[in-house]
Length: 160
Length: 77
Image 1 (cartoon, each protein chain N blue to C red):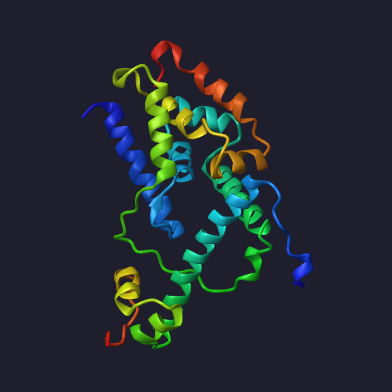
Image 2 (image 1 turned 90 degrees about the horizontal axis):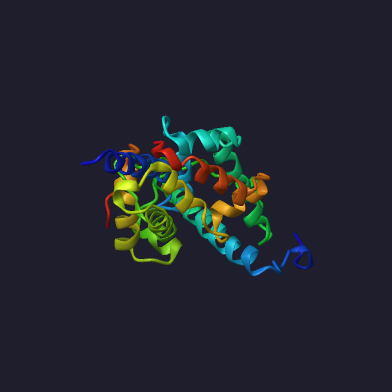
């Protein structure tokens, strides 16, 4: 397996852990973003961190989006007082539709498999105006287009 | 809250995102509520009836997780 294969495998494992922790049955695009933000040693992670989007900040932004979207239907998260369910440590969430789209967009952003790097995968997650990720970033005051431009800036020079 | 204060999302993006968020919340609520019920000694048929699903469905969806969580489960039927 190539370096990028190992990286993708690690990202899917990390994203799966995030999904499981949430009690989600599927890995969604926002779980990929959490994994990309947490996996150190990549240009993708460095750009996110420089934009104030470390794993904690991404999680906070996603939590805000969740509460905001619920409030549009008149539901307050604070009103629920049930204990948290215990996550299943053996559960292996499958890849959901939004994560599949993000991966396809990421692959499409690279000039072939040999060119594919973490930054392309981040571009794939960011390159949509629809869904949880762009909504969370907008609520956090992040300019998504500018963030994508900074990610693209890392691509020449074959930076990992 | 009174019905007239319930917001009606005007923007389709907000309305669709609300659907996604409500499903996430309902899934979380189901996991927590089923776990709580089973910890308090409810049976699978009781939980299934309360949720309006078959006991096979509720067992398939929750049994592994609850066993892993160390919940003492009553006999299935």
